[in-house]
Image (cartoon, rainbow, N blue to C red; front, side):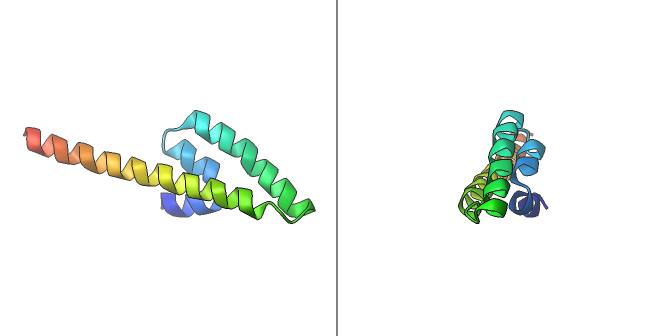
Length: 76
């Protein structure tokens, strides 16, 4: 579900992944990308970079969570 949110609204995915500072910075760039997309037609590249970054953060969060589960199972 977070991957879909990362595709549609990268700042929201970053916020839900526990990265508030990155979400604020990404939100600023997201607004700029929409502004340039609407008025100049060139905001797609910036939006794609933001979406890729959000995908990477979400993937890192899920892998980190999986590793913590594995470690907690080994301790028991």
